[in-house]
Image 1 (tube, rainbow, N blue to C red):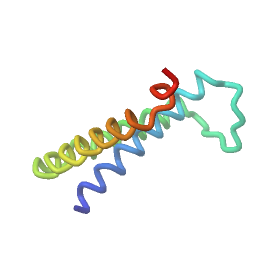
Image 2: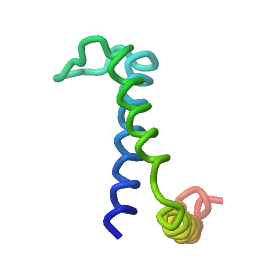
Image 3: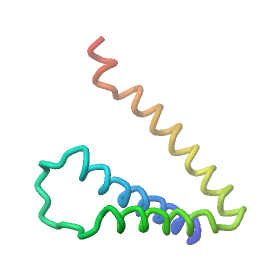
Image 4: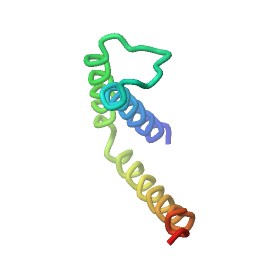
Length: 90
């Protein structure tokens, strides 16, 4: 279980690293109380490092991660469909 949690954490860290870089260019006027120096280098390196470690997991961990991800997607889709404000409005 610990390995699967680590895989999820690495994926989250990679997403955050990519998100910081994307936001820097798509919304440059956002308030940034914390600045990352050389973000053009740091963010991709952080994301690539996390993804490299993510891909190094054992096959059995991949199977568990995929299974839990599919279960989560199904729950998210069913819940979202039934509680959608857009669906209620139409």
